[in-house]
Length: 431
Image (cartoon, rainbow, N blue to C red):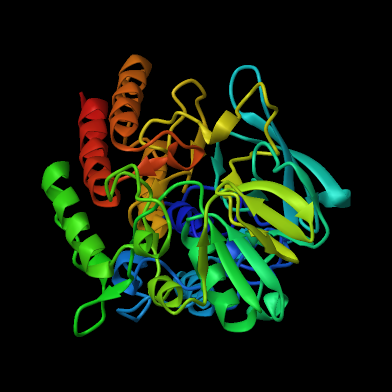
């Protein structure tokens, strides 16, 4: 098991309770991955104002509720994973400060795994395993604008991965680039401490408030059941969008897609900060000009900091590129878990669900454990390939083409279909 973040701990628990021999290697000294701010493993991009975009009931593992109905802040989420591991008693199965350097498939099956660090004999060690579960996350390798904006910039350029606290932007003239959740959070933060805050978007986006109604109820607790057809659920998203308001009213272009046809952006305050003039809407950057930036509408502003909230690359540094890789963040997987061509390598959390990743990773872990225990068998490869093709076609029809949509899934539908497939796989096995 590679990683002891939010997904890795779910797998470790499933293997531990299933009495399946395993090793879990974590590169740093902490459980919780990106949810531990300043994690010594160097991979966390958490910031002090970060909170979940899914509420407590929607993000909790099935047998261990986090204990809040609201959106928990990052510190509570990080502590939740520690409590989870200690409650079920498998911390001793995690080897900390140990990095998986390389995974090599062996002829006849199995893998040679090279590890380094405190858990490796002599500082580096090779071991043999029958299976490898990948839970190294996909929010740690920053993706910068491609191609880079022309020109030179005299000020600070940073990726959102290196943003930690609003004080980094205090007294600056800040341009935030990107319309995702991090972009909205950082623009909001900057608007309270910076001398000027500009939010630059290439295209229009729908931004839904995280809490709506008289009781400020989290919006993800009002979602439609999974059995409803998508056109009906899309109307529900449209209601949330109208109740949230449109940031296009403040100078951004109208979105060229319907709400729900892109990964959702959620923010409680960005509408208010735009309305107050504390955040100023700008189109895409055209050119960097020393201490100034020109935008595609011809406007020019003085700036001394640019924060790029432009997403991440999916990267598996322990695999050879010719073995398994994800060019343009695209790795076709059966139900986002099983590689159709490589037996014995399984993936956790390599998805962008319209919901929380944690319950999904828990379900994936139970699924993998059932396979390893001989209680489930996968469909034939040709059927897995056909299923992947079907899902990708539906995805291409619904979401606009983008590297951020290569792993999109509907959380509730995925969970329902996974449970059904596990039952079907058990019947295949008994037959």
